[in-house]
Amino acid sequence: MVQAYILIQTEVGKASTVAETIAEVPGVVKAEDVTGPYDVIVRARAESVDELGRLVVAKIQQVNGITRTLTCPVVHL
Image (cartoon, rainbow, N blue to C red; front, top):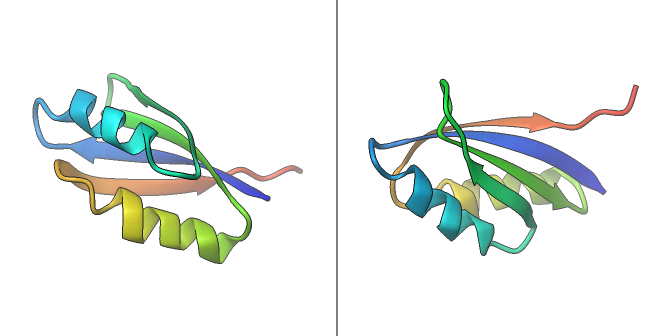
């Protein structure tokens, strides 16, 4: 199991709608509005890195209002 935080920048005024939409995507554990350089932070999980990539590119980045994403896989050191 691979887990990641996905940091999302949105168009002005779209953070809440983006977070609500992404929260319904299978594989998304949590999606929350935040303040700072990013507007939404998502916790996601997938069976593999490839599946995580497909989740981000095919599902999350397709949500209207997103301008940029940064995926940060969780590592256990």
